[in-house]
Image (cartoon, rainbow, N blue to C red):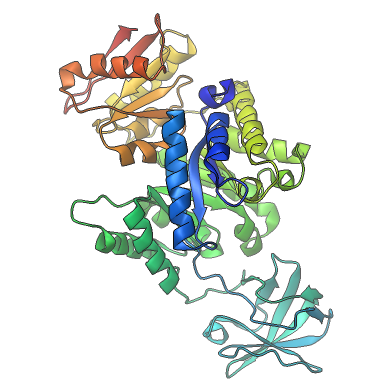
Length: 474
């Protein structure tokens, strides 16, 4: 394990794909600093995903590091249907027709394009924008009749089959959970995924439905995965507070979000979302195009380095690699560079935090949180060990962002993996023990895992209804 991977506090989520699916590469990525493995269910078969999950868990076990499994559901991506193989040129100023409930492209002076969402004509209004292929092409609705949407080409270009579509001015009635997603959920539950990310969330109702489906799919006694809401729709920005209250964590999916709201607003919404998540103690991932040029090149651009560093300065729990680790030429190097960026930024004064306590924060929690941060700044302690079952909760301990490792002990392997997403937390597996022996046994296990060494001073937060703390020297 590299120095950066051990000392960094910000977690790294890596999308696993053809470039990173073998155990050797996965082990190298874990050593470099990967904490969470994302499986994109927009691609691949169940057999392929099952093999990937097995390889990830095997690699983590061989490296002695827990790695969380994140199942990312495809969601209802609306796309164009089939067009001729060579594509179709859309000329600026010309008129086109989008038609629902058809599979056929019709050429002509006003070409007719099939679309995959059968109710789109009911959800759009005149003057609504339609973006195609990540915004490279733009249409404006000028008339809607029956199942046909007549639109003017605002920004033209060549369009090919199955390109994605965004509707930044419209509120769509399509469900965030497709039939494919529901089947994928059942498979994920069978495989024991730790987190599930829901795409195209628009309101808290989407999260409530997902949680209900997970409970229905669970075997007797099986815990359900934690839920991440992907913020990538303009409706999700509007209803963010209710979504945050219902969900276990947030992913800022900047790609589609940048199609739904003005691109210049994305950095501002990112900062607001990350800060709100920190205030309530829920993990947040900043995702999309973090080191995008490393899909092709061995080094990132300076702008990408700045972007990643700013996500760390914003105090995101995690930053995410997509194509860089899934299909890129340099998956391990991308993780190494992201880890170095995190460590360098975390050691900077720019990473300092403002207080985020409010009148509703219990006094004991506020005092403990600030005390541990103060002790860590002055190097009086080298680590904190606690249990996720604390009345105090790891959320409150993590909010203060102590500049030392927060070791969380659990007897539940899934809980250990779920905690891998939290900033500054190094979870570890430990057999259940009595509260009075918790500290002694926890430190013994940390020594066995070589996470602490002789001479270190560890603050032990005791579990139980009346938590307290003391100090142990390793």
